[in-house]
Structure formats: structure tokens, C-alpha cells
Length: 504
Image (tube, rainbow, N blue to C red):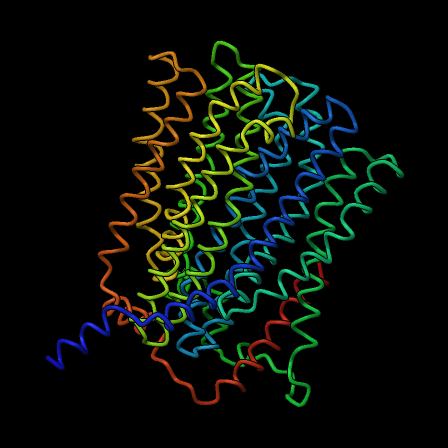
């Protein structure tokens, strides 16, 4: 009986443990929510300023923002997520050298990817003309993309640095640095776009200046919060084997592991992101494309806002699961998973209530068009139902990343959105003549298939096995000299980031 009681206590954690885990996840996630809302505000400022320049600038800017999101920002964000399991589990096992090296490799990987993306952005105009886009709108979009290329460098540094700090639970400085840069964003945008008369180029320039400001504040934070008595050192530069791995990426097993995590993470992000663009394209072929496209833009704004909470939960639980698996505590990883999914289900209810009860008022924030408002009132409750599935699904993707299984999430996203959602949306919208409502039901079908599949994987996870895999991936937990190594690794990272940032 005593053995049975012990097993039962292990399987079902005590309420204080649940509350403590909830506090830990909230402490990591709340700053991320605030940071995401600030980023949403920054994007709204860009769109509003483009609208003030004129309808042509607004249309061209919208095309450019969609193009840069699809081909650039989603790719960099997804690739950077490949470092989450290595950093999360590395901090848990106290393998700070691996964490430091992973950060540097990820930055290098994103900078190399930015070269290819930048070349694509430079050639936006001929590409869009081949696709028979409006020449005037294409010209404005092309100008924006050319001036936005430096933002690729900023994001190549920011994404890995955010994940690095988040993986060790340091998210409040991220929020304050982001908030501080946004304080300067609006006056910089107004000054460049209107006072100097730069127009669209000024808006693009203000965007990357804001990101470089955030980067500068983060580097300053890391530099000034180091222990002053410790000598500045960069331990990675003294290890010839590590240098060889950095300089010969195709030969290093470490690079292979990072790429095996980064590419599926990128696909998991992009496959879902691209589906919304796919829905927008389909909306243009409906009977009343003007109303459908306007409603599609409103739906995307709504889902982007609602995505801030599940994204924060996903990032938080990824760090928690990674830390606990790296530290050899599979039961703690199981607890973090259960608490995060429970919190996701709770949060998703508010998304449904908000889109259902506030659908009329929310639509009027964006437009006064009667037809658009009527269609919006019809589809927003469907989007709320999507959120019931999207929040636990996005959170579960974070669990898979934290346990170094991003490929599973990418596979589920592919068949859910493109083998279930896309055919269903086409049939409902064009064969059954449901129009844009049919496209939204297609999205709902994709989300349901996705959440059912991914929750099945998560709840069938063998956490003891995942802990063993984490030990193989990042090494066993070793607490000796942890504080000293943390200081040295962070000082090395600061030196590296300052070189990359200010020598450009």
C-alpha cells in the first residue's frame, strides 16, 4: 500500500507544486505577452503611417509587409527556434559552453540566410510583374523591401538573443528593452516619413532602427549586469576544436544537430503562417473579392492579436520543458506540460468569448463598410472556435521544441493545414458556395485536426525517455562552477554580439 501511495503521489503532483509551476510559467510568459503586444502596436504604427501617405503607399506597403513576412521574418524566426531545445536543455544541464556556441552558430546561420533573403527582396519588382501585379503598387513595395534589408541583420541577432535569455528565464529585461525602443519608434517614424519627406523609405528605415535600438539595449543590459570582478573572456575562442566546428560547418556534427532542429522548426512556423496568406489569395477569387479581401485582412489582424497569448505560452513551456529535461527531472517536465496545456485551454475560452461578444465593436475599429461588417460578424465566432484549438496546439508545439522534437510538429502542421484544411476550404468556399465563410471553416478543420494530433503525441510522451535523450544531446547535469561559467559565457556572448553589431 505504501508503494502504491508513493506511485500515486508521483503521478499526481500536489497543488503547491502546480501553483509554483504556474507562477514560473507566468513569470516567463507575461513579459513575452507584453513584448508581443508592443510588437503588434509597432506594426499598426507602420500601417497607419502608410495610410497617411496615401492609398497607393498603403497598398504597396501592405504588399511589401506580406511579402517580407512570408519570405523573410517567418523564416528567420523559425530557424532561430532550432536553438530552443539546445539552449533550454543546455541551461538545465549547466552546459553553458554548448549554450554559448549554439547562440553564435544560430546567429551565423541566420546571417547567411539573410543574404539569400536580401537578394530575393532586391528582386521583388520583376518577380511581382511576372505575376501580373499592379506596376505602381509593385514599385512602392519594391522600395520598401530594399530599405528593409538591414532589418534582416537586426532580426538575425535579435531572435537568437531573445531565445538565449528566455531559455534561462530572463524575460523581463527583454520586455523593458523592447518597450524602450518602441517609445522612440513613433517619433522616429514621423520624423523620417513626414518631416524629412522620405515617405515609404522612411517608414522602412524607422522599423530597422527600432530593432537595432532593441538590440543595443539588450547588449548594454548583458554588459552592465555582468559580475564586475570577473575578467572578460571568451572561452570559445580558445578551444581549437570548437573553432574548427565553427569554421567548417559542413563537417561538424554539432552543426548537423542544429540544422536538424532548425529546419523542422522553420517549417512548423512557416507552414501555419503561409496558410493565412493562402486563404487571402483564395479570397481574391470569390464572387465579391473586395469584401472578402477586406474581411480577410481584418481576420488576420484579429488572429495576430490573439496569437500573442499562445505564443507566449509556447515560448514559456519550451524553456521550462527544456530546462527540466536537461536537469534530468522528467516529472517536472511532465508537470510543466500539464500546467501549460491547462492554462492554454483556459486562455482559449477568453478568445472565443471576445470574438463572439465583441465581434461588432471590433469590426468597427477597422471599417465602416456595411458589407464587410456583416461578413465579419459572421466569421469572427468561427475564428473564436479556431482559437479553442489554436491555443493548446501552439502551446504543444512549444513542448515539442523544448523536448527536441520539432519535426513532429512540422509534420502535423503540414498534413493538418494542407491535406485537411486546404481541400476542405476549397470545397466549402467554391463547390458548396459558402464563400469566405467556407474558407474560415477550412481553417477550423485544420486547427481541429492539428490539435487532436499534437495533443495525442504530447500525452503519449515517455518523459523518462526524453530525459535520457536530453542527457545524450547536451550532457548530464553538473552544478559545479555554474555561476562562474555563466558569467564567463555571457561576457563572451556580449563581446561577440558587439563585434557583429557595431562592426557592420
